Length: 66
Image (cartoon, rainbow, N blue to C red):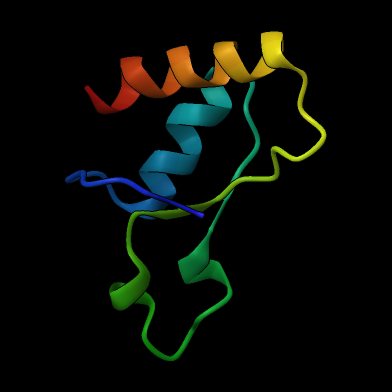
């Protein structure tokens, strides 16, 4: 899980990273009862990601969130 502080909604976050070729889910998609509580928490599957791909993902996140 990756928690980001942003004014973007989870839908906007997903759209922004998808524009960079990255597929993610947000924890709010799994926790319907209190979705606002889980805003900005990304579910990232990086266990099988090679180092080069991880660097690209980090660079994309920096562009979006910084």
